[in-house]
Length: 185
Length: 301
Image (cartoon, rainbow over all chains, first blue to last red; front, side, top):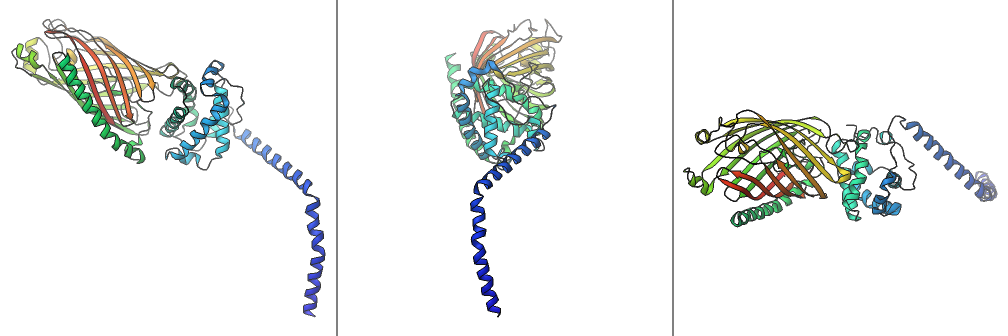
């Protein structure tokens, strides 16, 4: 009797299984739409969160200097900046002074936002999608030495990409004052 | 001149070799969090001027020597050789920079009169030795990072100097064998122009940096002197520039001229810099137009 029950159960499951299997197959398209909706919701929430976390009193993290457009050309335009960021990020991860700040970061996002930020500053037709410098570096205990280490790594990367030294300095002159928001220690 | 040039070039060469061997040490130090911890940017602590303070070759700058940031202590040591037509000057010493705020320095200047010493009855190779203790305090501004402001970094400083040849100094008319120079320096890196500018006002009674004592028969009071430097950055580790330094003219028997130099400063590694200059110190005692080559090696962190 016992074994009979078991067989009956097995049969029942076997019979219902196709119905179960059928269910997702039918709604695959719906599921994709649901997933996409969830993703958009999450993105919106993230945007809201970052908007909430931003500091309205912080200076503009990407002020545009149209007169620096020729400097952007020296960097190879937006594409040149994007290529530079690959070398820059590799350098930041290789340098023990900067590695801890970037190892666990969303490196793809950081590279994209740095490209956007530098592009806007150098008068390019880009839009900066990141947060202000105070919010984005909050709580990271960055001191002057860390800040300067990042500058050094950036200089080495710009050298590797053949950016003329004078052009490098024109960009650095616009970035340097950001130490006031970035260095908190 | 050719002899002076030759000696100086060999000095420069040995300094360069020393720099090369120091470099291996510096490279090791980069991997080690200890010695190379200094977080200032390359060359932004300046080189060491002839009296031992961080600056150019002739004049102190408002920067605090060494690579220490406001969270760190930095230090360096230097050796400078100046070979003039008729004289030789060696200067060496060390400084410590505390938290990018206060700089303490100690240095020794040895001025070899070579054959002029014989002509003056002092004996060939007669040498004046002067020790200088310096202190400098940064009081305002930021030379490097505040790039959205033209305002310079400002520091005040003093150099106490003591010369070991009191009797000879008295004979030439100097009033004292020791003295204190006071100065105010303003320094700014104008990064958009790749240019560093410095202006220093020095209140001094020193004759020939103090080598010929302090005060004289013609004038014995403090006079304000102007010192200026301009450096153009060619690359991250290479700068060229020029300096001008006015000096008092206190001694009746030994007219004194202004000094100037043109220099190249090179930092092959963060911990090592080599400065080579052509320097003109003008008349010194009985010899006019004292020109020559200045070579200076600095190692530090």
